[in-house]
Amino acid sequence: MDTGTDFRSYYGKPVLKEPVWKVPDVPAYLYMGGLAGSSSTMALLADLTGRPELARNGRIAAAAGAAASVVALVHDLGRPTRFLNMLRVFKPTSPLSVGSWILAPFSALAGAAAASDLTGYLPALGRLSAGAAGVIAPAMTTYTAVLLADTAVPAWHEMYRELPFVFAGSAVASAGGMGMITTPVAQAGPARRMAVAGSALELAATERIHRREGIVGEVYEKGRAGKVLRMAKALTVAGAATALFAGRSRTLAVASGLCLTAAGVATRYGIFDAGRVSARDPRYTIVPQRERKSAEERLGVSS
Image (cartoon, rainbow, N blue to C red):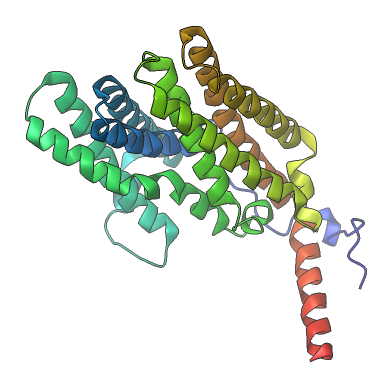
């Protein structure tokens, strides 16, 4: 069966409705949520290894990121009550419902931990909140990737295996970068290691996306999304390479952190834009379906 790129739908109309999520609200929501989750983990590990300044900065970044993520989401929804309505029920089969129940308690716990640290009030409650936020943090870091992959948007759904690793790596690198920006080099060792490890994971997962067979992968390489993702890759490589030599240089540490912060923002926007492009063009919906049907028919004949 020919599934070439000359496919056309009736009257050239899209098969799917393009996502109506706003820019920059949703890309910011995707980025800030990941940063918040990984920063909370960084703060917890810093506490356990006796780095109080890195721990404090991580808690502040987690609280600020979670608050900004909620604000961006509410602004996209239009009214705060729409976000509150999502908390009326808990539906385990719905990533959106589960995500709402991750975001809400994490934001409250991260805010309480940061407030206690900054004011000195209720330190026991602050430590308990920080620990609970750290437990939720891995889910906070990656649940937005599951939200995207669970949609019918081809560029997101077809990459459901890779997106959580891309988001996790990018979030860990971004948190490490923020730690390097805000913390003296003497205490920022874990942040530098997070920056390098997160960058490596993100680059490996992104490379896997580019190597995936099929037509959908091209939306990550062409047009505006392709340019933004190439820029994100260059910034990630530069930030990780600089982090390796930032152990004694505050200037290099800040430069590395800025590169990784910009890379994290660019990665989220590039993936978001690739999804919109794939929904707009019916080829990316129909051609993969035909390819899967052909593969199933071949397997049926061979069996």
